[in-house]
Image (tube, rainbow, N blue to C red; front, side):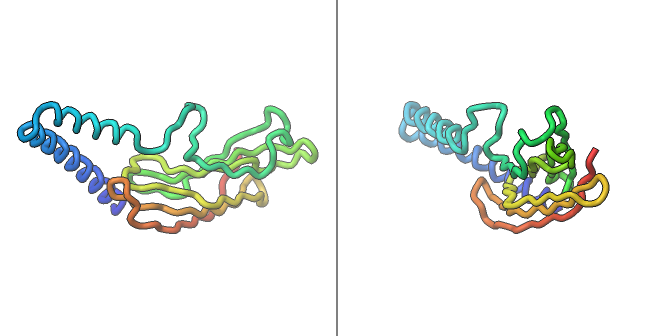
Length: 174
């Protein structure tokens, strides 16, 4: 419930900021002139459009950190598979863990290759930064995992509070 309230607060403040920008542009137009209002509006649009990290390719996301345990070339070709688990779920979003695994060429033993953790859903006002993902084999068709990270609470994009999080559990292999 707190996540939903925080998200709605961020949206309300964002809309209020946009309304204030339009009022400021109208005041500039009345007091200084149309030319100043147009320059002010274009400046705000350019400033908002150029903020944040840029991604030049659609295939990779630089914000998603990947933990690699063994090289892909040490796995039997065509033998890579994904295991997926939801490690935290709220009303509006969830934190997921994805593990890529396969059988080693040398021993035919199933081993984790890579792991990632992302937060998806309606995540306005938050930033999930995993700091460590540990995955290791257990008995049967399961891996035990430990995911630690920092959840940043933001207000209009400004970080206000950093909350450490740790998740432990088991993920089923297919």
